[in-house]
Image 1: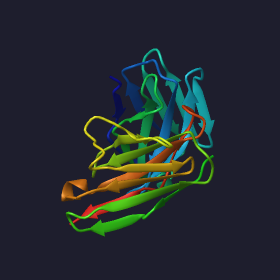
Image 2 (image 1 turned 60 degrees about the horizontal axis):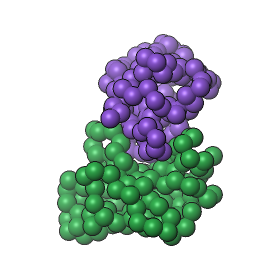
Image 3 (image 1 turned 60 degrees about the vertical axis):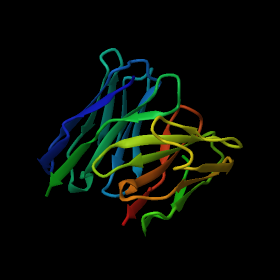
Image 4 (image 1 turned 90 degrees about the vertical axis):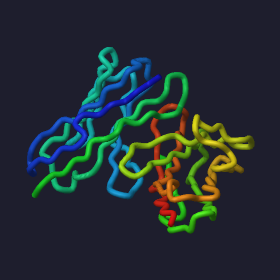
Length: 112
Length: 114
């Protein structure tokens, strides 16, 4: 059974810092891995999708890497801003299906 | 990417009543899903909404409590029946445009049961 874990659970940093969020999964037979952002009480916004054949994806100040063999992904945020404050979730599809299993999230607060 | 409209965005309901949540997509999609996010928790899949047939429910979720409709490839509803305070959550609709590629989510329905 796929399990997804995110570390740290919460993170508070001063503006301008570069930071890394971690995601680990137990079943490496995944098609892809997706990172989302969730603002309080809101839905999810897709940030980056990494296909199983890729090692990383970049969008602006965000870079996500994927190491299937070790069951890990990282989300790197460069030059953090207060507007980056949100909960970040990673998710992987259950093996052989299109149903996503979500991590518990990392609550990020960037201080001005 | 698919644009998903979810209604209502929030509601406060009396226990014992039912609420129907609508999910409208701006394009035809193969897969539609309903998730629940309880306070302080991550997302849990409720069911897969199947077009033209009964939804497929995950362990712990039943059709009598969460009836789902999907009359076509762009629309689905989730009903939360006979509500109790434990049903207070954010309910989210999700679609996968091309099957197992990128998942997109609606803005969610924040339900409070009093």
